[in-house]
Amino acid sequence: MKDKQYQKYFKPLKIVAPPPGQGITNIFRNTGNADVNRWLNGRDHLEGVALNFSWGFYTGLGDWHPGMDPHIHPYPECLVFVGLDPDRPEYLGAKLQYCLGEELEIHNFDKPTCVVAPGGFYHCPSVTMDVTSPIGYSFFIISLGAAPASTWLGDGFSQEQISRMAPAKGAKSEAPMESTFGAKRVHFGEETISHGHLYDKNMVPLVPNTFAKRKLKAEEKALYGDFASGKYLPGPGMTPNADWLFGKDLGGMKLNFCWGIHKSPGAWLRPAGEMHIHPNDEVMVFAGTEPADVDWLGAEIQIDMGPEHERYIITEPTAVVIPAGMPHGNVVTRWVDRPFGVLLMNLGARHETKFVE
Image (cartoon, rainbow, N blue to C red; front, side, top):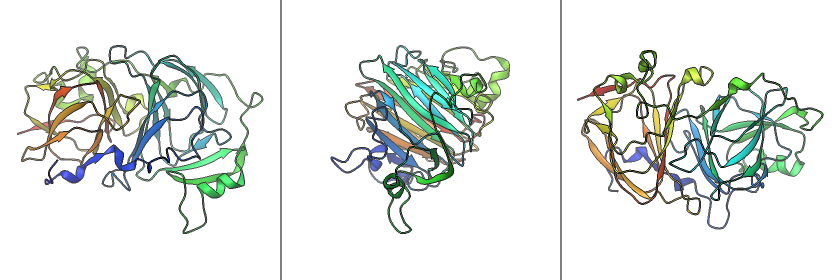
């Protein structure tokens, strides 16, 4: 890709790949945690956008952070568990247990799910109980903070772990985030957990629901802006099996996001060629679905940026930063060797969209 005016907004996910042979930091390398992942943040990678996100593949069983949880963040986040079968969007391929709130309320699920965690809200442990898909499942974090930060509350930390995650001033942490530790530690065990329904609302099922799947109800059209005007129709490149959640679904968060696996070439919208803008920052992630190679996209995609319609071709997993008011669009999947995932994150409760000349 040659240098162009908007080149800086295209961020290959491999820019956060660990050095060869290192893998995920040992602090988070536990049996249930990611086999491989990529984690980008607004401070270091995404042009200051108030967002950090991760994408990874999971096949192992067990607690993701033994002895470390629950934990909290100073910002709200969504924790999204998805399957990898483009034709079975309801299939996660795993069974998980998730803990929510100071009550340590246990929730179990085996379908694609978004866990909503407001700022300061206790969440985790996350435990993978079973994996039924031969290629595992995927998980991504969407956090509304440019700089990743966690306060760990579990009572199973060693002093060595603490010193590695929150080292002395001037030393580099081994963790991919700023870590602090609560003065009061929480024990997770059979004697402390609960099995109520206080936080059922925080467990949001993912069900294909976009305008590419069905006709929108009148009250839903305001969520999509001009996309719901009736002038624009989904093209052959747009998947009908996408899930789109808005602020109203996410406890009032200033976020809407769309996730889907695409497998067909063609323009995403008809008529093609028109650009649109949003009043909020947006990040659009194109990710591969091959667990054996997280840095392979398996497709070629074009997208235009700016009023000049400056064209970019994407051939590797990439995050595209789209500042508020930036014209963009005319997305076309040029070819597909393997279905690929698209995660769109927009920092508004609605996907306010206006098409422009």
